[in-house]
Amino acid sequence: MKIDDQEKMLEKMREIARQNPDDITIIETSVDSQIQIYFFESLQRIDENEDDVNIQALYNELICKETALDRKKEILAQLT
Image (cartoon, rainbow, N blue to C red; front, side, top):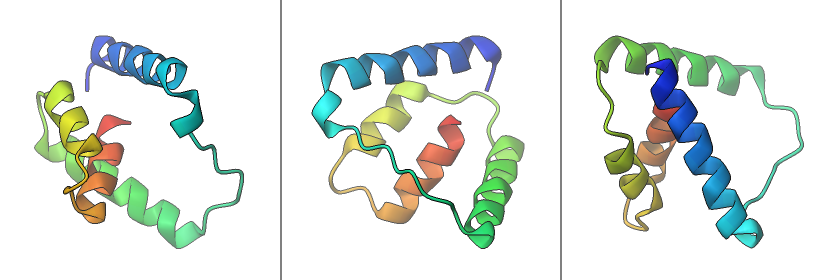
């Protein structure tokens, strides 16, 4: 993802947080090292396979209630 796209995504996330402050939960806990490794390996795979990400399509898929949890994890990793 390009820097400009990352900045746009960050601004979109801020906008969502401002509009829906009650729907945002921040988890303050340590994350198991195996989960962190899985996350970063997933990120590498995504970076290798994605040249141009359609952020709006990913966002729409992310907020869809029918989207599987594993797919939502992939989307979140892709958007980082």
